[in-house]
Amino acid sequence: MIGGGVTEYVVLLIYLVGMIGIGVYWAKNSKTSEDYLLGGRKIGSVLTALTLQTTSMSGYMFMGGPAQAYKEGYFTLWYAVGDGGGAIFNVGILGKRMRRLSYFLGCLSPIEYIEKRYPGPATRIIAAIIAICFVYGYVLAQFLSAGKTMCALLGVPLPIAIIIGAGVIVFYTFAGGYLAVAWTDFIQGIVMVCSMVIIFVLAWNQVGGLTGLNESLTAVDPTLTGMWGKDNMYLGQWGVVAGAVGVYLIGYMGLPHVVIRHMAMESPRLAKQTVVIATVWNQLFIFVPYIIGLMGIIMLPNINDPEMIVLTMAYELLPGVMAAIVLVAIMSAIMSTADAQLMLMGTMLGRDIYQRYINKDATDKQLMNVSRICILAVGVLSIIIALIKPPGVFSLVVFSFSTLGSSFLPSYVGAVWWKRGNTTGCVASMICGCIISIVWEAAGLATVTGMHTFFIGIIISIAAYIIGSLIGKPPTKEMQDLIDRAGCKTKIPAGFATVNYKDIAPETNGVLTFLKDSNYMEERGFQPV
Amino acid sequence: HVFAFLWP
Image (tube, rainbow over all chains, first blue to last red; front, side):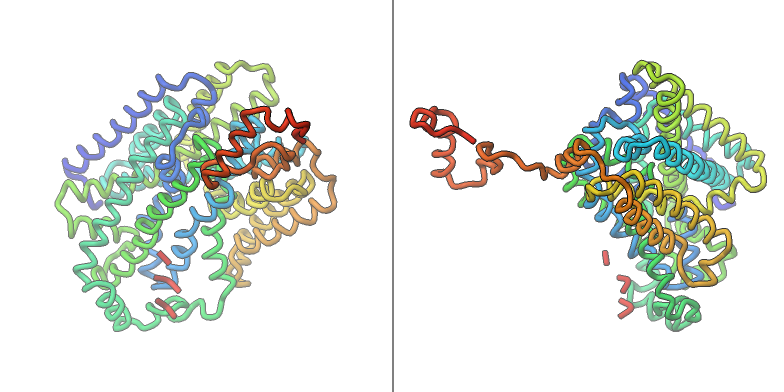
């Protein structure tokens, strides 16, 4: 136990009450199912950027990341290199087009989006089974993680810590829906990045800046500042490096609880601001934990539990209240990921199961209420499972990221960038991506072959998508037109201006406006095409 | 070549 004083309890209580307050506020403002499940598609660029990134970053960044850097040296920054560019790929490739196509197709859930883009009975069933199993595994892990963190930091007994930590997440997600999740993510994102940067700046002075840090590390062990890990344990293993970079550089495009953020954007035109805000946030938040882990080698050479580096530094470098805020930041990182996954579970069960198979004529109000009940039910069930910890359930978590990424990434990207992408390709890629990820991880082949699970999973999944799409029947003409329209590529007949009057010379603009507004051409026998 | 890492 590191904290546990009155200050920590007061700061944590203020934070948890604040989160509940946001849930209550947005409960009153969610009028329709689109409001509740997608924030009414009215989420601005700052909110989109922060909810996108905080959903992607879990408590690992405060605990597991620094601990890994402490053990393996600079090599772990390969993960940061991929992670840092994740938003550029995610928003740049999917943002605009997925927002448009999901709107044209009238989708409220990322699984419904896959089924409508790749119509067929197998699509939704396979997609829903993969998503529900592995997102649920994720929810369980985050709930247990929230409890363990409170238990380790405050000395609260684990069962009580799980009930409080997970209970608050369940309440504000259940009450306020997507808008509560987005706004809590926004606040959590600010707390997370500020805490991390403050610790980094103070520790920076202690180790003598970057040069001082690197010289000290080289003095301890020269391989710590090399590219291949402590004692060159990964020497020449480019498959591991490609997997470490790729898993976070492109992996988020396959996570349903992350890509749903594109669907909720107010306008496709917000993507350009979103990509800048998310990238700046990433650079401040992602590289820093790993470097703090490296600083820990110099500042805390005898620490028993490397996962406590960030918090130990906080208590050594900061006054009590500030250190307690770092504790809140760790909880924020866990909660911002858990709430998005819980929200997605409710969306999938309400929209993709209840409205699709149980009550096809469900009204908007019924859908909203059923989604709410599903969030509450999944939340309570997860708390119970986290408390009794049945064997085997938590092994799901090990597979979650790679399996979700490999299963869905080709289908989400191909949906808006390849008109030939079809149901056969989508189903083939989901099945192959899922099976290869599970087998590769379960058999421990990543260690044997030096090929990261995600790296091999995504290669097989992309190949299956391309081959399946070339073998299967092309999408309908209507679907291909919609994909063109989502990319603003539909050919418009001559006679309709496809240039922006603001961008052309004033004289030309004047002539065009005159021709458009008058009957000058028609009077002389010219008919518009 | 290591300074591969220090992308932001």
